[in-house]
Length: 457
Image (tube, rainbow, N blue to C red; front, side, top):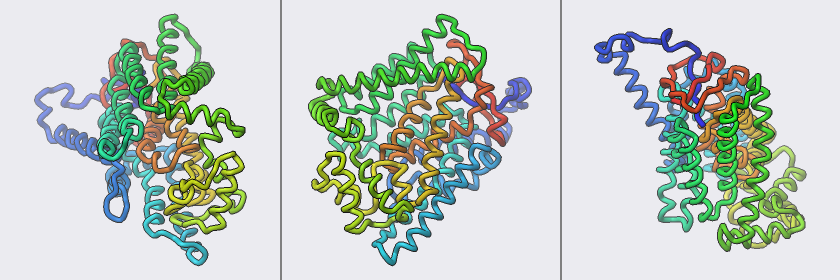
């Protein structure tokens, strides 16, 4: 499964003097392009690093914001980028203003206000870094660089976590491995997915295992469809057909993971959690994520949100606990006070975290992010060779928008939203065969509408 999105001009039309004359490779233009590629690698790796610098700001956010003068040219005319930029600025401004207004009634953590507002502003900036870098390295190599940054960021978990693979290293390695095999034959991809699935199987990671099972099922399905020479007249019809197949694969994968968890295959802890959650009257999903009960109760109590860095009052804490108790969860265990409301409002949902911090604009931004992730996967299904690293990152983004913390999202957003900006329209999706050679790395281009599909660089 592989794909790159490059300019719609032919290779002959886009040849430079250095393509025709080997001696011209010593020209300053070639040196400058190599320098740009090196800068792109450094920026992309830094964007994947979420370690905190001074004032609680992350490396990735600082680099993304500081690189805007360089990367802005890559996205300034990209139509899919415009709404993301507007909503990010609006959400950031709303979060900051609401925080100032709340100071008379709430305790406001200045560091949390600063981190939240700047992280919202950094979202489009990080996407610009990915787009700028992908047009010099290729989308696959850009994803690989971000994945390497995530890997560097997760290395301290080897000393601080009892399960570092589950809580960071595994996802980073998965991004890198799927990027490396994206332009290989499907058999190589299947082997890589099986190995990764095996590691997650013994690491008590149910959701990631389900994602890999979905991607594996998609690869196998597309291999069989290609072997049978299955043909659908238009990319749109092909995408719709594959979405239906993917839905079936997803249901089978999730049921299989739940059954494996209940049987003890994923470990005793996962078995106990799954059995308890399945037997709850609230159902598996709500029992697994009781924070949804707190989110709904807080939304009903204060639908306009709170503001960035606002610490909840006792009455807000009581409302949240009541919402969780309604799902059969016992909130009197320290989790609510210490994690969810210890320093700021953490509702274990990117959507609700940003609603609490930035009101309706924050919620709309997260819904847009989820929509762009789903649209990117749909456009990628317009042919029988989809992109594994994009699917993994997009599924992770969609999950964490709804039932995962905001803090997980920033590392994945450049990959998913950057790919969404770079992709050509679905109607232009190309049917590429398994033996197609990868195209040359894409050159810089002004708009996303000028892109045309080619296989992954």
